Picture 1 (spheres, each protein chain N blue to C red):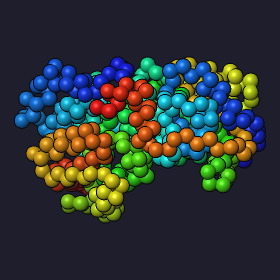
Picture 2: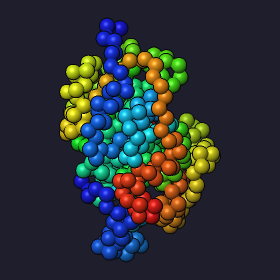
Picture 3: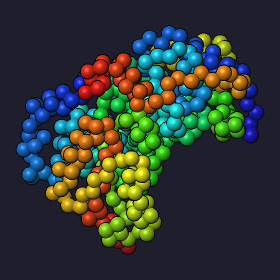
Picture 4: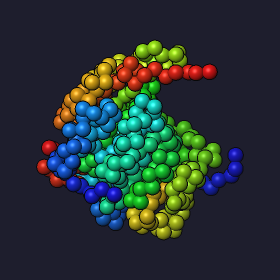
Length: 198
Length: 200
């Protein structure tokens, strides 16, 4: 269990001092999920909410293995939105890892986050776009950005592996410095299109 | 549908009994009557009242309990609100937060929309669902003597704890706390974390 009521920003700073290699020097060689994990550590994220997802599998595994992070598996994504409200009330920082279809499950609960000015960083792996095979994925995927914007989220989109880490780093600063919802949509082009092999 | 006992407890008396010795507990309320009941028991900076986000109260409690493992976190919500977030029982069952207590004021009706019956009126047993999800301590309270036994346990037992408390649908006056969500968040964080951390 983590200590109660310690300062999240100074926790992040302490990590940077203690583990500079984990935070930055290893970036060049590491894969983007490993570098994202370092960004989340630097941001002082200590609650990682997720629904199991192929695109986020590596990042979820890293969060689960990280003793400074509590990985919280959800039955549905809106639970993670409410979790972020509780984390904020208690002085923690929460990230929500979701697939684009899971964004649809969050919409009403995002209203609470907007009303309460709770910072929320959402990392969204896209389905239902680049080379998609399954037509059932398309409606929510194609509406993801519009519905997030309609709920007051700031949306960044990233289509290349080299760009993901910088984008998430900027999104994290924006979310926690200004207490807003910031979602990063990570293209299916980067993650790879799911193959349906017979 | 199996026969079940009719609720007899007064919801305001229940909230007062649970919160009268609250100590340094952190309290989250579910929208509607549980928010009014908690306000009626005495406004407190460490009450976070929800007026929306239906289905989210238990998960707000979990996020808070994980962030503040040394503090008691008590969620007071209603049967309709809990029914909308049943998946969170499984999520909390997996997390096993010892400092978290969920209290459902179960009047078996949707009070805010005109007193339509909820599923708990028709045999759905919320404490049984919590038990099946892995809550080590669960109960359904019908009487004043059971309430007197369980109020201190709600404040102190190692959890996650789940208590359904059967309350009547008797009409009671509205007691409305502040409703600006950002103001409620700031008030809570300032009281818990101090102003410097709350507004950094």
